[in-house]
Image (tube, rainbow, N blue to C red; front, side, top):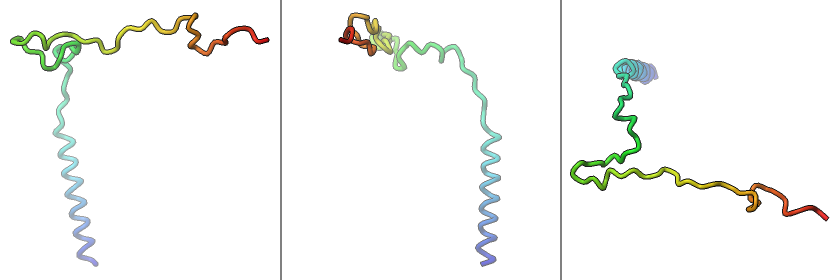
Length: 79
């Protein structure tokens, strides 16, 4: 039993050291202006300009009009 516990302790310490080394080697990256031009396709190629066309994320809709009664409005006065 003593040998298996010492192996667990050694493996646990190794994992802690490994995670500590992985955490210290992370690089902080900055968002550059190229990343902010998100309205263009990722596969935009100057040789094929058709791939660079912008697409709407969500098409424009006017919403609900009063005459449509789609916002829970009653159909008329109660009798």
